[in-house]
Every structure is written in structure tokens, then in C-alpha cells.
View 1 (tube, one colour):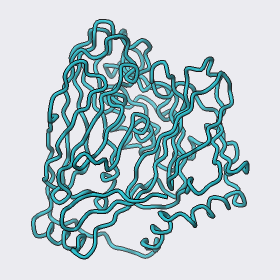
View 2: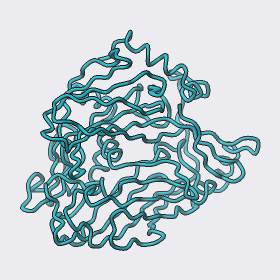
View 3: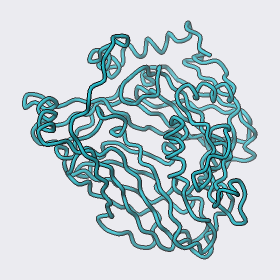
View 4: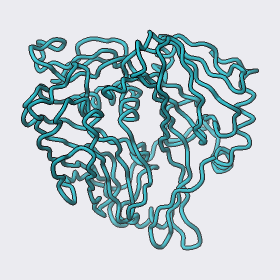
Length: 426
């Protein structure tokens, strides 16, 4: 798949990248030394159930809701519950929407209204698709767990997983006791963005569930003393998301010149409808990448890339709404979610479905682990990087190519005030 001689532009670009050079200087490469597993310090788990600072009012689409994060401990994971009623003329037009992934156009972690990191519907879909089997099964069930979706549907419940970079491992957890005044801000998606017709949501309520890990006080003080010093801020590497799109012509071959300026460790891409943002809509059959006209990656068939993704932990399980495994299959490809275990693939009413082909994911490192850098591409240092794809004909100009980059950036925490600052990423 990769030609070493054609990777020279990438290694040369990475060499002048400040971000990648700093990560290499601070890292320790010692993968083969034996290390015994240590017992974790004394800790406990708590789940908080949070409501928005102020409940949204109709019309709901385009409104922002904010959850204040308690100064309790280390947030481990989050999921947003949405319970809603659909307007009388808001049937899901076609049976291929997953409203939980598209309930919000943006989910951001903020401190005093300054954004630390963000997530988009495409990012949620791509992350869920790229998770290892067990977690992919759980999160896929969470993001698709919903009642039937028809006009006048009442009390529909869906759950949106939140993918912030601080939930990867204990070493990436953010200390909410010290980094105070955190909030989770969610922008309710547009009518079209949710894949609804005409009137959209008639009523909706939200809850944010937060899992906390809390250390015993003596252990916590040791952690605090080791991480924070009055002489210098704590610097941490974290992942964030950069998205770029291009409207496609009626053709079977398309390209996009990538303008992401950051050192990227994963790139996800798919074709979606712009008439109603239903996520992946047309299968990408192959792709290639060039830098200044030189081939960086050969033309790779779709199935070959899905095969590679399996080595990075992509899930291949198909599950229905009740959580039953039905069959092994292509990751997230045309998966139906029935309301009973006996009818996982068909239902008499319109049901939620993770519609369309799975996003294509390119990993540039040895691992998909987002807690350290095992390889990345400094796109900002490359000359005209271009992604070229082939697909079935789009049929019209109401489709777009969405490309989502996960990149490294430097963050720092003030040792006295706990203020989080996002630094450079080049």
C-alpha cells in the first residue's frame, strides 16, 4: 500500500513540524523493556446526571445548551440523553437517519466560554466506526438506541456518545477539581442536519451523564504535586478535530485539496447528501493521495482499507436495538436496528438505522491510540496534498465529500489558577 520512496515528502514535512518534533523530544521510546503492572491507587466511581444550565425553548433547532461540569474528580466518559417529540409533518423522509449522531451540530468542551476541544456529527460516526469490537458494540448500541421514528412520534429517546480526547486513558484524564469552570456546550442541529422534514422537533429535553473517577485524598495530593509546579505550567498533548468539505459534481471521480494545517494522525472521509445530512450516502470504492503531484499512497480499494482498519481495532459486529448480535459483517454498512430480537433487520414502521457505507479511515501511525503519537503527517508542511476518490455516480450536485482530520495540539494548564490554554499545532 505504501511506497517508502514516496513517503519522503511526509518525513521531511514531519521533521520541520514544531509539534511533532516537540512530541519526539519529550517522549521515551522503549517499547520492549519489561514492566510489571502496578496496582491503581485507591479510588471510586461516581455517575452524575446533569441538566442544562437553561432548558432550550422552541424553536429548538440552532439553539445552544450548556452543562456545567461539577468540580468533583476526573471525568472518564460522557453520554448525552435526548428525549423528544417529532412534529406532525416531520417524518424521517427516508429510512437512513441516525438522529443520535446528528442531534448536535457541535459538541465542545469549554472553560469560561473558551473552547478546549470539539466534536462533530461526522467525527462521532467515524469514531464509533473505528473503535475496537467490544467498545464499538457498546457505543453503537448507545448511539442507535431509539424508539420507532415516525411523524408525531412521542417520547423518542436517543443517546449521543461524547468523544473528548481526555477520555482515552487515565494518563489523559482532565482534573476537574483543579481545571475549574468547565462546561459542555452543545449546538442543537438544524432541521436538515437531523434529516427531518418541515417542522422538526416539537419538544425535547436533555441530560448529560458523566462518569467520574475520584482518588482518595492522599493519593490525589500526590498526583497534584507530581503534575503541577508553581515554576511552570503542565503541558499536555491532546487530539482535536479539523473538518473540511467539498460539493461534488455529477461524476465518479472526485478530489479535494487538503488544507488542514495541523499534524494529523487519522483522517476519516465519506460522501453524504447535502439535501438532508444523512451521513455516508454513497460508497467510496477506492482512494489515493498525492503531494505536489507525487503519489504518496497508491490507489487503495475500499475492501483493502477496511481490512487494514480491522488491525486498528475497527468493529465488525452488527447489532439490533435490543443489543443482540445478529451477524458479522462489514463495519457499519447498511445496519438496521429492529425493535425486537426476533426482527433485527425488518420492522413494520420506519426505524432508526446507521445508514449508508462506513466512513473510510486512514491511520498514519502504528496504533489508533490517541494518548500518544505513534505516527502522523504534518499536512501544513506539505505542498498541495490532494485526496482523490472514486465512487458510484453522485447523480447530481447535492452531495459533498466530508473529510475529518484528528490532529495533535499542545495544551497547557496554569499551575496556580487551573486555566487551560490551547497552544500551537503546526
